[in-house]
Image 1 (cartoon, rainbow, N blue to C red):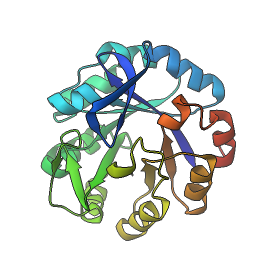
Image 2 (cartoon, rainbow, N blue to C red):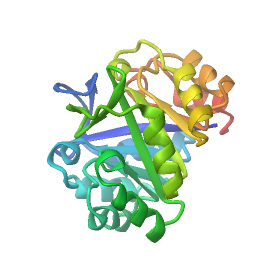
Image 3 (tube, rainbow, N blue to C red):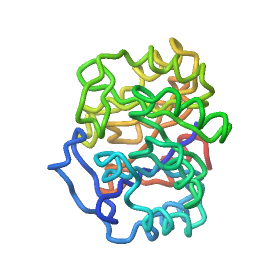
Length: 238
């Protein structure tokens, strides 16, 4: 199982939110590149990067920060505001190995399909659940669609991996929804990475035992609740 440390960006800085609420921002670092290097040195093999400003505005915003992360030399993926093919191309040109499409998985299926054709194996879809439905536009709007339906749809278009977040758990240390992510993986027939609510090493173990493709860990790393090297060993990465 892969374990992806998360780097969320606002105004070029590393932040975390609670339940996706932009009014709950906590700044953890001024230099995203230094954070990426620290994760690299602990053994991380892939990072999860989110341009939160981009998610709200509908276009990538934190290009300089993304280039600084790329300079650390660890593979990473980027999501947030990728709603045109040019945006996908831009983050890949900045050094990202994968582009993460969220809102587009609901509203722009033609973009998902074209991105998969242009960049095979490099397109991931983020599916975020809020109140039982898929949330879009930086988690601020509901879509009325079920998570499994969206996952099946993007799988048919060529998406290789889905990242599933229970928004109500995100940044709250309430425990990851490993069971829900495993159900999604079985129902949709696509590898799933779980995200949101990871609080302890037990959450990492639960995701591995559930047979998930991966887990994303964010706030627990920044607040010292989880040691990254230990987590990577539990995941089976080192």
